[in-house]
Amino acid sequence: MAIDFSNTEVAFRSKNNAELKKAYWLFKMVSKPGLVNFGKWAMTISLKLHLPVKWLIKKTIFSQFCGGENIDECASTIKNLDDNKVGTILDYSLEGKETNADLDATTQEIIATIERAKADNAIPFSVFKPSGISKFSILEKSNESIDGLNGEERADYLKFVERMNKICKKAYDLGVPVFVDAEDSWIQDTIDRMCEVMMSKYNKDAAIVYTTVQMYRWDRLEYLKTLCEKARRENIKIGVKLVRGAYMEKERDRAQEKGYKDPIQPNKKATDDDYNRALAFCVENLDVISICAGSHNEDSANVLVDLIEEKGLDATDTRLYFAQLLGMSDHISFNLSSNGYNVAKYVPYGPVKEVMPYLIRRAQENTSVAGQTGRELSLIQKERKRRKG
Ligand SMILES: Cc1cc2nc3c(=O)[nH]c(=O)nc-3n(C[C@H](O)[C@H](O)[C@H](O)COP(=O)(O)OP(=O)(O)OC[C@H]3O[C@@H](n4cnc5c(N)ncnc54)[C@H](O)[C@@H]3O)c2cc1C
Image 1 (spheres, rainbow, N blue to C red):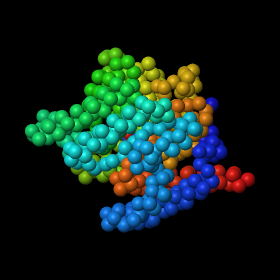
Image 2: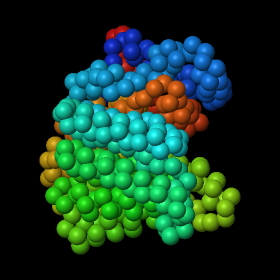
Image 3: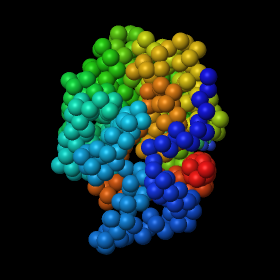
């Protein structure tokens, strides 16, 4: 039976009245695109000038969408989610690092999240972004082939391979599954190639390494099928995080600018249809595929719920997971978990200044233009009214 995601009592039970009021105020602020653009500019400048705005950011947008500045600071968020049977996925959200020292440091921090997950049942997965452990230009240059790399570039590419292997090996040794996030299509072939190598190496008995498949690309359902064939051919498991995809405008703009075929589906319906087909394909092949549906779309959540029921699968089967981002779509996360499904939330963390690009993206995604805020706001409003009686 489809889940009723409009139950706001369940959706917001982890938030007290003050927290709910704060969330309402915050979503109201970010619903105004002009204010978001001004805020983005003002915050970036203020941080650069070392003006004392960190506390303001930390108390507002940071506390809505991030767990803390380091792993220890995330403890209360982890507990709060766990109290509501929702798992945590610690997401070290540093972007744009380019020196080998910084990239090594990020690798070490990701390893620390895997170790923390091993020690805590409230953390079912770990995650990382490949561009967080490699120079971007190296991922881009090696996208078609590594043959064109010069000596220095080849050394940097090998460092990326080494870091990726270090993370996946640690995940394997500790038995903590790790998600590899998907990124821009012009670096995604490099990422896919590495994910496949890691899955062949570490997914012999269970899905430890999860690749991410972006269904806003028209070629991804076919790719998913080739992954399944690989699993059967090599007698391995495939881990797949299924998402729609976060970089649509950038993808379309670049394709137009450079004059190649747009890799994105022609419209939203085509993306939705392929997403739901991919869910069905994964469930059909659950003997070799483990899935995590990373989405804030209620219909897709219910498509997977229905598939689980139709096939008579156990909702607590760890090959079936739902995931959302901290601070967003709590009505989906908490209603799923209260109905017995496996759910986890990405809990981004890192120094305030470093996670600003992530926070700005969340704010932009939540403007009235993108359409998310209307839903978040009306659900919060409904719950505040209910509590007042
Ligand atoms: C746990 C989690 C992990 C994630 N990991 C990644 C990741 O590794 N890589 C990544 O890229 N994204 C990732 N995302 C973001 C995700 O890809 C989406 O951007 C976001 O979740 C919004 O999509 P939705 O499924 O929630 O549904 P909706 O809000 O219903 O769908 C919005 C999405 O539909 C697609 N879309 C919208 N309009 C059109 C159109 N006109 N034509 C074609 N397609 C359209 C776009 O992908 C857009 O983001 C993740 C999200 C979650 C919750």
